[in-house]
Structure formats: C-alpha cells, structure tokens
Image (cartoon, rainbow, N blue to C red; front, side):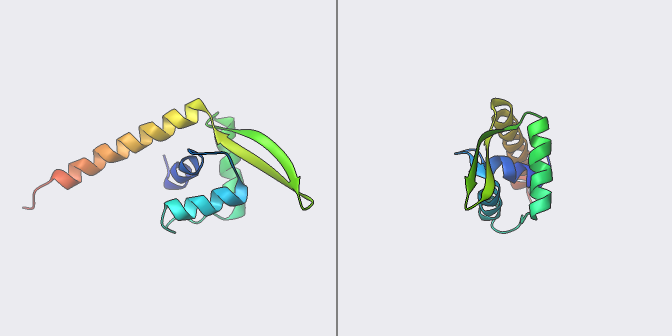
Length: 100
C-alpha cells in the first residue's frame, strides 16, 4: 500500500470526513510529510470507493458547494490494520538488528 493511501484510510479511522478535512488530517497524521493536491485526493477517493475500502456516507451543500463525506468500510478498516501490522513487523526487523 502506498503511503498516501495508508494515510487517507488512517484519516478516516475515527470518523467520516469530507475531502478538505481528509487532506488536513493526512497532513497532520504524517507530520506534514504527505500533502495531497485536490485532484490527487479525489482520484484516490474514487479508486478506494471502487475497491470498497471507503464509502460515501453523506452528501451536503455548504455555502453553495457540494461536500461529500467518506467513511471506512469494514474491508477498508481490515486493509488499514493489515498494512499497519505489516509495517510494524518490517520495522521490528530493523530495530532489533545489532550494529556490526
């Protein structure tokens, strides 16, 4: 799983969010390492929805602009957890290594 995808899913783990809120949460969670352009984010959201990892849970209009809220699906939560476990196992290999 690519880092932007991981952080998008992670941004949705505690509650549904709309696009701008996802972008802000991704930047926060990644300590500003991952910043998503609007087009990149919405392409990723479309792909993740097609893959059934996220779903649209609400559409609303705020100040005349459409705002779509996304949430993790059970499959998305499972994929996020599996990736976190994979990364933790990979990190343990390095952290346990003794200097030569």
